[in-house]
Image (cartoon, rainbow, N blue to C red; front, side, top):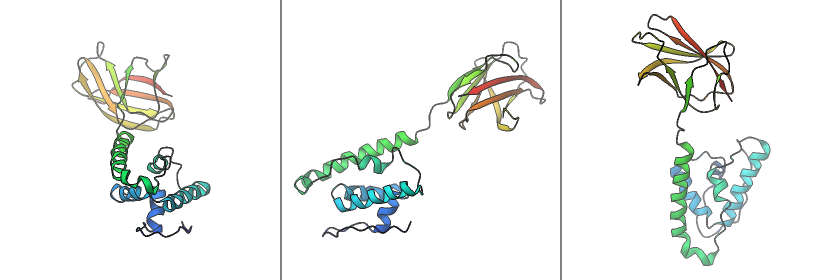
Length: 207
């Protein structure tokens, strides 16, 4: 991004300015980020350099705001003084374990939200689901003639296709899982038989 990183040189080797900048902007893979984090725990001037880059990027809006980034966690930790250097290895191991758990939790996919479709189009209220989560749709079968194969199609309020796929008969219910999160709005879910005949159409509101 062209911003010089000025820092006092010490006897210990420092990461290059380019590496510190890439770390501050979350552009480094785990293998390169981990040793830089260990160095930042004991090097005040490199901490200041990363903080300056982070704040400069946020001011120019050239990098997304990171409310829970690795650096935002690390920068809140107390700085280690020279007298506490003997504790650094154990502290680094503990921090590494914490960041590993944090990374896993941040990237773990959320469980699908269960939605029982009962409100057909033209009737109210619509079925409700949270926006931004995958969905597990279930449709009761009591009044449906088994066709051997069912297809489900979801469209938005304008009629544009959003998702389509097969529905499985599980314990007397048709079940379809939509893995892609939905934005806020009204959706229509169409159930088709094996000959592409429309059997049902349900309404869903994502909030």
